[in-house]
Image 1 (spheres, rainbow, N blue to C red):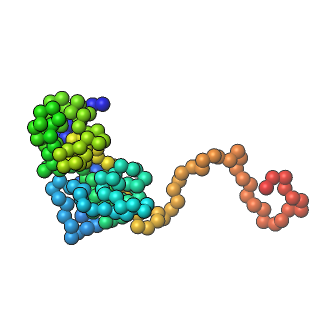
Image 2: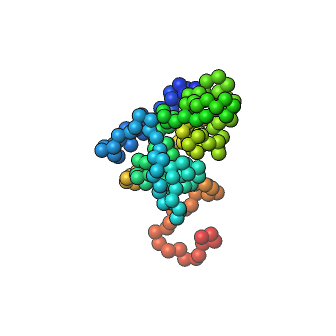
Length: 185
């Protein structure tokens, strides 16, 4: 797997400006933080259990359902795919040296090896937080945008073909009843 730089990912994900504008339009009294972070304390009850943003993002069915709720989108923008940035204040300890580093360290020398080692599920930082949750952009742990349904139905049906075509076109109905029943319905 080729490791992309932050520059590559930033410019290959051009949905962010549109998503950010839509997000701000939905919540004009709210402002996005510079890092666009998931809340660390927010929980949402889905399918009978309270879930944090980091847990909602782990199951795609749960994520698709929860991110339909505006409150979840506001508190869990990374989980809902509205944005994806590393936490600028997040730091963790390098296992071999004990040095405390930021997310940018992952993409420096030996980036592929570092990302493979530190971005795996269950690799915790000193704050007992998965490193990939603190550094989702560097760890390539960004999620796709969960789209909301439109507020009104479309005016015309879609033009999708039927799954199985008929063998022959149906005959137009007759105006008057026939004298004998037909062979086919």
